[in-house]
Length: 97
Ligand code: SF4
Image (cartoon, rainbow, N blue to C red; front, top):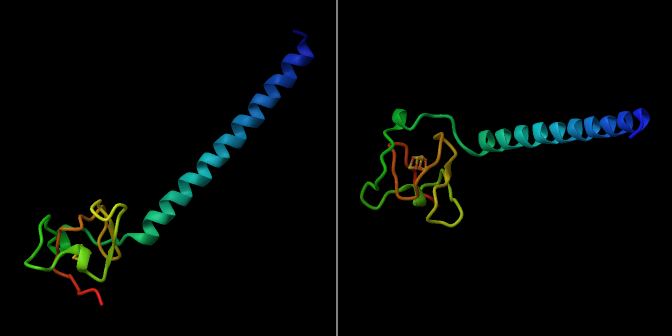
């Protein structure tokens, strides 16, 4: 392998690595922004979140709930941060219309 060929190959590898790093950074930022946009910021403890229903009231029939896929999986809440169980409940529950 000549010196010139080695240099060209190294340049190509560096270009590809830079491109991949840039794409990874963009995907990472997009994922973070999606999570912040969809989920709330209140802590579960601050709203009395519990992992069981309160009678017939539960996250899956709350107006603030964003269902997961499938519907039995954890979803998100427009007010509360973190994964939210469809069968959980909290003090700011509001009926879905
Ligand atoms: S009950 Fe509370 S945690 Fe569940 S979806 Fe409604 S506001 Fe969010």
